[in-house]
Image 1 (cartoon, rainbow, N blue to C red):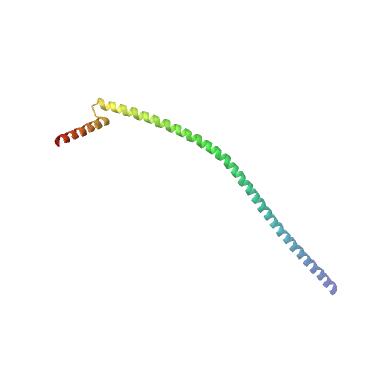
Image 2 (tube, rainbow, N blue to C red):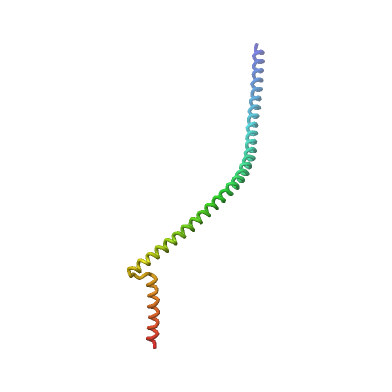
Length: 135
């Protein structure tokens, strides 16, 4: 009976060792499969990244053209509005200046041009007086 027990122990020991080898082999295969999956993801990731970069460049080129066109239209419109506004302001200022000058003249108040002309005449008279005084 001892022999049978020993034989049974030997069989169980062999089965446990075999099971350990199989578990080790299965674990190694799982590890290698994980590495393979990682390598595939890395390779596909690089390929996908390259494709996305190419698509991004194409998209940017298309959008840049639209953006440039839109900005060009906006700049042209802004320039036209600025020119119109500047012209309108100039007309309003000229008209307001004319009305102000007319109003000042009606009340007998000298305008800027009147004062400038008067200053020029005074300067001429001063020169004449100085030239007469030096004789």
